[in-house]
Image 1: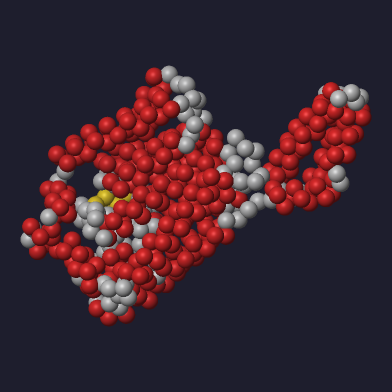
Image 2: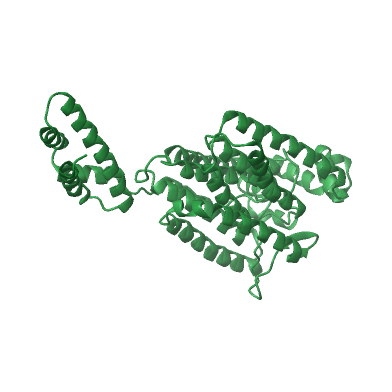
Length: 435
């Protein structure tokens, strides 16, 4: 290409991009227009025109650069997923309902703290969309290493209360590092690892990939973070499924993980403490155990039976009999208090939220963005499904919170960060060069 041709095209492109504000959109439009003008010029030259005439005619075909620039600005400007943000705020708002059941002495403090956490959560997620998610992929192995170190630090130095490992305390602040932050780092790291993974890799690298996947999983199991382990593994396998790796490698990765999960589950069941086994047996036959072990499964079934379409209201004081009514057992409490119509509405809102995230995954311009949204989708979906099914007596009772509905600051920040990343991917869907 001659300098004259390049200069003539560049001069036209500069006039067009002068009307585009986003730097990323400018680069994308420059690339698109350059390719289009070059191809158009070559076709005209094959038709018998000289280079100069072909270049001039190609530019003429594009029309007025100012009009074209304004049209391309509207087409490629950053987007905000207002629908996802609206659902996000609605779900967070519903999280205040369980707090209304607290006694007068505690209600105000819980509502105030939740209001502060909610404002921080919403502001954090909305502001995170303005951060370019693509800068994270270069730190994929650093994020992985830091995550594993933090999990080990939590295991070795974390505080244990009532047999449950809560994580490392951060000085005298009362805050805990916990296991959610390492899980977030692992989610970000695996999106970057799978983005860079070639379709054909050696057996040694396949083994390394498997070990990278299973080291954090086993650490989560060791620290008794069972639902976090399942959510993490589901996210990794889900991201691998959409990463574009070789189908044979994907099948091998999937079935190897499935077989290993079965072995770990068997070993866990054989070596688990008796109280963990009792939870499974009580779920299978709740009326075959004494009042202590079978109390909660029987109570939940009774609550669901007596709930009715419009609920029993807050006056029943059922929260005194259901200690985790604002955290793990929030779903049966809401159904009993506000009725099955409200329960169906809540599930519908959560399904719409998940569907909206799936829609964002389809619209992501690059593979890394698709992986981030796909992994985030599963980190939401797994606990939502388990919590709802657990709350309807279809799965054993365990420690699983309902995203944004269950009370808890670290949980809200974890899911807010994922939501912010998803919003960041959506925002750049029309300004990132497709990959």
